[in-house]
Amino acid sequence: MTTTVSAAGLSLRYGSTHALDDVSLRLGEGVTGLLGPNGAGKTTLLRVLATALPADSGTFTVLDHDPSTTGGRQEVRRVLGYLPQTPGFHPDFTAFEFVDYVAILKELTDREARHREVRRVLAEVDLSDVRGKRIKKLSGGMRQRVALAAALVGDPGFLVLDEPTVGLDPEQRMRFRELIARAGEGRTVLLSTHQTEDVAMLCNRVVVMAGGTVRFDGTPAELTARAAGRVWSGTERDPAAMAGWRTGLGAFRNVGDPPPGAELVEPTLEDGYLIALDGMAAEVAA
Image (cartoon, one colour):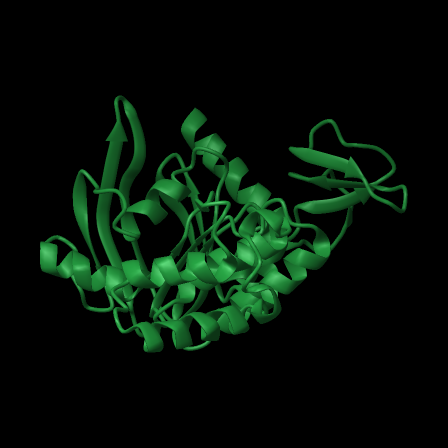
Protein backbone atom coordinates (compact mmCIF):
# COMPACT_ATOMS: atom_id res chain seq x y z
CA MET A 1 0.00 0.00 0.00
CA THR A 2 1.28 3.44 -0.94
CA THR A 3 0.69 5.72 2.04
CA THR A 4 -1.26 8.89 1.25
CA VAL A 5 -2.28 9.91 4.77
CA SER A 6 -0.05 9.27 7.78
CA ALA A 7 -0.68 10.09 11.46
CA ALA A 8 1.67 9.52 14.39
CA GLY A 9 0.93 9.96 18.10
CA LEU A 10 -2.18 12.13 17.79
CA SER A 11 -3.51 13.01 21.24
CA LEU A 12 -6.27 15.36 22.36
CA ARG A 13 -7.89 15.84 25.76
CA TYR A 14 -11.14 17.46 26.83
CA GLY A 15 -10.53 18.05 30.52
CA SER A 16 -9.76 14.63 31.99
CA THR A 17 -11.11 12.76 28.95
CA HIS A 18 -8.72 11.41 26.33
CA ALA A 19 -10.63 11.96 23.08
CA LEU A 20 -7.52 10.77 21.20
CA ASP A 21 -4.76 8.88 22.95
CA ASP A 22 -1.60 8.34 20.89
CA VAL A 23 -3.41 7.50 17.64
CA SER A 24 -1.20 6.39 14.75
CA LEU A 25 -2.32 5.06 11.39
CA ARG A 26 -1.51 5.02 7.70
CA LEU A 27 -4.06 5.21 4.88
CA GLY A 28 -3.80 4.46 1.19
CA GLU A 29 -6.12 4.65 -1.80
CA GLY A 30 -9.54 3.04 -1.46
CA VAL A 31 -12.18 3.17 1.26
CA THR A 32 -11.16 2.62 4.89
CA GLY A 33 -13.98 2.09 7.38
CA LEU A 34 -13.73 3.59 10.87
CA LEU A 35 -15.80 1.68 13.44
CA GLY A 36 -16.27 2.22 17.15
CA PRO A 37 -18.88 2.84 19.85
CA ASN A 38 -20.16 6.31 20.70
CA GLY A 39 -17.41 8.28 22.41
CA ALA A 40 -14.64 6.21 20.81
CA GLY A 41 -12.98 9.29 19.31
CA LYS A 42 -13.96 8.71 15.67
CA THR A 43 -15.42 12.16 14.98
CA THR A 44 -12.57 13.84 16.86
CA LEU A 45 -10.04 11.98 14.70
CA LEU A 46 -11.86 12.99 11.51
CA ARG A 47 -12.01 16.62 12.60
CA VAL A 48 -8.28 16.63 13.35
CA LEU A 49 -7.42 15.06 9.97
CA ALA A 50 -9.74 17.57 8.28
CA THR A 51 -7.81 20.42 10.01
CA ALA A 52 -11.04 21.55 11.72
CA LEU A 53 -9.59 20.82 15.16
CA PRO A 54 -5.95 20.94 16.32
CA ALA A 55 -4.51 18.02 18.27
CA ASP A 56 -2.67 18.65 21.52
CA SER A 57 0.27 16.60 20.26
CA GLY A 58 1.29 14.35 17.40
CA THR A 59 1.74 14.90 13.67
CA PHE A 60 0.08 13.95 10.41
CA THR A 61 0.50 14.52 6.71
CA VAL A 62 -2.00 14.41 3.85
CA LEU A 63 -0.68 13.73 0.37
CA ASP A 64 2.77 14.92 1.49
CA HIS A 65 1.42 18.18 2.97
CA ASP A 66 2.15 18.99 6.62
CA PRO A 67 -0.63 21.05 8.27
CA SER A 68 1.58 22.19 11.15
CA THR A 69 2.34 25.38 9.20
CA THR A 70 -0.13 27.91 7.81
CA GLY A 71 0.93 27.18 4.25
CA GLY A 72 0.82 23.44 4.77
CA ARG A 73 -2.63 23.64 6.34
CA GLN A 74 -3.90 25.56 3.30
CA GLU A 75 -2.46 22.91 1.00
CA VAL A 76 -4.15 20.13 2.99
CA ARG A 77 -7.48 21.92 2.70
CA ARG A 78 -7.03 22.23 -1.06
CA VAL A 79 -6.73 18.44 -1.44
CA LEU A 80 -9.40 17.63 1.17
CA GLY A 81 -13.11 16.90 0.89
CA TYR A 82 -15.00 16.79 4.20
CA LEU A 83 -18.56 15.68 4.87
CA PRO A 84 -19.28 16.30 8.58
CA GLN A 85 -21.83 14.32 10.56
CA THR A 86 -24.32 17.20 10.49
CA PRO A 87 -23.72 19.34 7.37
CA GLY A 88 -24.84 22.93 7.79
CA PHE A 89 -27.17 24.06 5.01
CA HIS A 90 -28.75 27.45 4.39
CA PRO A 91 -32.33 26.26 3.81
CA ASP A 92 -33.06 28.89 1.17
CA PHE A 93 -30.04 27.96 -0.95
CA THR A 94 -30.64 25.78 -3.95
CA ALA A 95 -28.47 22.70 -4.34
CA PHE A 96 -26.47 24.55 -7.01
CA GLU A 97 -26.06 27.66 -4.86
CA PHE A 98 -24.84 25.68 -1.84
CA VAL A 99 -22.23 23.72 -3.80
CA ASP A 100 -21.20 26.90 -5.61
CA TYR A 101 -20.71 28.61 -2.23
CA VAL A 102 -18.45 25.75 -1.08
CA ALA A 103 -16.55 25.96 -4.38
CA ILE A 104 -15.88 29.65 -3.71
CA LEU A 105 -14.54 28.75 -0.26
CA LYS A 106 -12.27 26.22 -1.99
CA GLU A 107 -10.80 29.11 -4.00
CA LEU A 108 -12.39 28.32 -7.36
CA THR A 109 -12.52 31.96 -8.38
CA ASP A 110 -13.16 31.73 -12.14
CA ARG A 111 -16.96 31.84 -12.35
CA GLU A 112 -17.35 29.90 -15.60
CA ALA A 113 -14.91 27.16 -14.59
CA ARG A 114 -16.41 27.01 -11.10
CA HIS A 115 -19.93 26.56 -12.43
CA ARG A 116 -18.72 23.76 -14.70
CA GLU A 117 -17.24 22.06 -11.63
CA VAL A 118 -20.47 22.52 -9.64
CA ARG A 119 -22.49 20.96 -12.45
CA ARG A 120 -19.96 18.10 -12.68
CA VAL A 121 -20.14 17.11 -9.01
CA LEU A 122 -23.92 17.44 -8.89
CA ALA A 123 -24.09 15.12 -11.90
CA GLU A 124 -21.67 12.73 -10.16
CA VAL A 125 -24.13 12.34 -7.28
CA ASP A 126 -27.13 12.15 -9.64
CA LEU A 127 -28.67 15.50 -8.70
CA SER A 128 -28.52 17.38 -12.02
CA ASP A 129 -32.29 17.37 -12.34
CA VAL A 130 -32.84 19.05 -8.94
CA ARG A 131 -29.87 21.44 -8.87
CA GLY A 132 -32.23 24.46 -8.97
CA LYS A 133 -34.41 23.16 -6.12
CA ARG A 134 -34.14 24.67 -2.65
CA ILE A 135 -32.41 22.41 -0.15
CA LYS A 136 -35.32 22.65 2.31
CA LYS A 137 -37.51 20.99 -0.33
CA LEU A 138 -35.16 18.01 -0.81
CA SER A 139 -35.42 14.63 0.90
CA GLY A 140 -32.90 13.60 3.54
CA GLY A 141 -31.11 11.35 1.08
CA MET A 142 -30.87 14.13 -1.48
CA ARG A 143 -29.49 16.53 1.13
CA GLN A 144 -26.78 14.03 1.98
CA ARG A 145 -25.91 13.79 -1.71
CA VAL A 146 -25.71 17.60 -1.92
CA ALA A 147 -23.25 17.49 1.00
CA LEU A 148 -21.23 14.79 -0.76
CA ALA A 149 -21.19 16.86 -3.96
CA ALA A 150 -19.80 19.78 -1.95
CA ALA A 151 -17.10 17.51 -0.51
CA LEU A 152 -16.17 16.37 -4.03
CA VAL A 153 -15.66 19.88 -5.39
CA GLY A 154 -12.18 20.28 -6.80
CA ASP A 155 -11.60 16.51 -7.07
CA PRO A 156 -9.93 16.10 -3.62
CA GLY A 157 -7.40 13.35 -3.11
CA PHE A 158 -8.52 12.75 0.50
CA LEU A 159 -12.21 12.42 1.32
CA VAL A 160 -13.40 12.35 4.95
CA LEU A 161 -16.98 11.13 5.52
CA ASP A 162 -18.53 11.19 9.01
CA GLU A 163 -21.62 8.95 9.29
CA PRO A 164 -22.88 9.74 5.77
CA THR A 165 -25.57 7.02 5.72
CA VAL A 166 -27.12 7.73 9.12
CA GLY A 167 -30.88 8.28 8.92
CA LEU A 168 -31.16 7.08 5.34
CA ASP A 169 -33.69 4.43 4.32
CA PRO A 170 -32.38 1.15 2.77
CA GLU A 171 -32.76 2.35 -0.83
CA GLN A 172 -31.00 5.64 -0.09
CA ARG A 173 -28.19 3.81 1.73
CA MET A 174 -27.65 1.48 -1.21
CA ARG A 175 -27.48 4.45 -3.56
CA PHE A 176 -25.08 6.26 -1.26
CA ARG A 177 -22.85 3.20 -1.00
CA GLU A 178 -22.55 3.19 -4.77
CA LEU A 179 -21.45 6.83 -4.69
CA ILE A 180 -18.88 6.18 -1.95
CA ALA A 181 -17.47 3.17 -3.81
CA ARG A 182 -17.11 5.31 -6.92
CA ALA A 183 -15.48 8.09 -4.90
CA GLY A 184 -12.92 5.62 -3.56
CA GLU A 185 -11.54 4.83 -7.00
CA GLY A 186 -8.21 6.62 -7.28
CA ARG A 187 -8.44 8.54 -4.00
CA THR A 188 -8.24 7.95 -0.24
CA VAL A 189 -11.59 7.80 1.59
CA LEU A 190 -11.97 7.56 5.38
CA LEU A 191 -15.53 6.55 6.24
CA SER A 192 -16.78 6.70 9.83
CA THR A 193 -19.92 4.62 10.37
CA HIS A 194 -21.89 2.55 12.87
CA GLN A 195 -23.12 0.33 10.04
CA THR A 196 -20.94 -2.79 9.82
CA GLU A 197 -22.69 -3.71 6.58
CA ASP A 198 -21.39 -0.46 5.04
CA VAL A 199 -17.85 -1.58 5.92
CA ALA A 200 -18.43 -5.12 4.65
CA MET A 201 -19.74 -3.87 1.31
CA LEU A 202 -17.43 -0.90 0.71
CA CYS A 203 -14.13 -1.11 2.53
CA ASN A 204 -10.85 -2.81 1.75
CA ARG A 205 -9.67 -1.94 5.25
CA VAL A 206 -11.21 -1.30 8.66
CA VAL A 207 -9.96 0.54 11.75
CA VAL A 208 -11.70 0.01 15.10
CA MET A 209 -11.40 2.67 17.81
CA ALA A 210 -12.38 2.60 21.47
CA GLY A 211 -11.44 4.92 24.30
CA GLY A 212 -9.61 7.25 21.95
CA THR A 213 -7.17 4.59 20.70
CA VAL A 214 -6.88 2.34 17.66
CA ARG A 215 -7.65 -1.23 18.78
CA PHE A 216 -7.76 -2.98 15.40
CA ASP A 217 -6.36 -2.15 11.98
CA GLY A 218 -6.69 -4.67 9.16
CA THR A 219 -8.95 -6.07 6.48
CA PRO A 220 -12.65 -6.80 6.99
CA ALA A 221 -11.84 -10.50 6.54
CA GLU A 222 -9.30 -10.32 9.37
CA LEU A 223 -11.83 -8.64 11.67
CA THR A 224 -14.46 -11.26 10.79
CA ALA A 225 -11.93 -14.01 11.54
CA ARG A 226 -11.73 -12.80 15.15
CA ALA A 227 -15.17 -14.38 15.66
CA ALA A 228 -14.27 -17.75 14.10
CA GLY A 229 -15.43 -20.52 16.44
CA ARG A 230 -17.23 -18.04 18.68
CA VAL A 231 -20.69 -17.84 17.08
CA TRP A 232 -23.24 -20.60 17.56
CA SER A 233 -26.89 -21.39 17.06
CA GLY A 234 -29.19 -22.68 19.79
CA THR A 235 -32.80 -23.03 20.85
CA GLU A 236 -32.41 -20.30 23.48
CA ARG A 237 -30.22 -17.36 24.33
CA ASP A 238 -27.19 -18.70 26.11
CA PRO A 239 -26.86 -16.78 29.42
CA ALA A 240 -23.07 -17.04 29.14
CA ALA A 241 -23.01 -15.38 25.71
CA MET A 242 -21.85 -11.77 25.43
CA ALA A 243 -24.67 -11.18 22.91
CA GLY A 244 -27.55 -13.24 21.64
CA TRP A 245 -30.79 -12.73 19.76
CA ARG A 246 -33.58 -14.68 18.12
CA THR A 247 -33.25 -14.73 14.33
CA GLY A 248 -36.09 -14.58 11.84
CA LEU A 249 -35.92 -18.37 11.56
CA GLY A 250 -36.63 -18.79 15.27
CA ALA A 251 -33.20 -20.00 16.41
CA PHE A 252 -30.97 -17.95 18.69
CA ARG A 253 -27.64 -16.62 17.43
CA ASN A 254 -25.15 -16.44 20.28
CA VAL A 255 -21.77 -14.69 20.29
CA GLY A 256 -19.06 -15.32 22.86
CA ASP A 257 -17.48 -18.49 24.24
CA PRO A 258 -19.56 -21.47 23.02
CA PRO A 259 -20.31 -24.46 25.27
CA PRO A 260 -18.99 -27.91 24.31
CA GLY A 261 -20.83 -29.42 21.36
CA ALA A 262 -22.40 -26.12 20.28
CA GLU A 263 -23.57 -25.80 16.67
CA LEU A 264 -21.07 -23.29 15.30
CA VAL A 265 -22.10 -20.94 12.48
CA GLU A 266 -20.12 -18.76 10.09
CA PRO A 267 -19.25 -15.40 11.66
CA THR A 268 -19.99 -12.03 10.09
CA LEU A 269 -18.08 -8.76 10.24
CA GLU A 270 -20.49 -7.59 12.93
CA ASP A 271 -19.64 -10.67 15.03
CA GLY A 272 -15.93 -9.90 14.68
CA TYR A 273 -16.58 -6.30 15.71
CA LEU A 274 -18.52 -7.43 18.81
CA ILE A 275 -15.72 -9.82 19.75
CA ALA A 276 -13.15 -7.05 19.29
CA LEU A 277 -15.16 -4.69 21.52
CA ASP A 278 -15.57 -7.41 24.15
CA GLY A 279 -11.82 -7.93 24.14
CA MET A 280 -11.32 -4.20 24.63
CA ALA A 281 -13.77 -4.19 27.57
CA ALA A 282 -11.97 -7.13 29.16
CA GLU A 283 -8.66 -5.34 28.70
CA VAL A 284 -9.99 -2.25 30.48
CA ALA A 285 -11.46 -4.34 33.30
CA ALA A 286 -8.14 -6.06 33.83
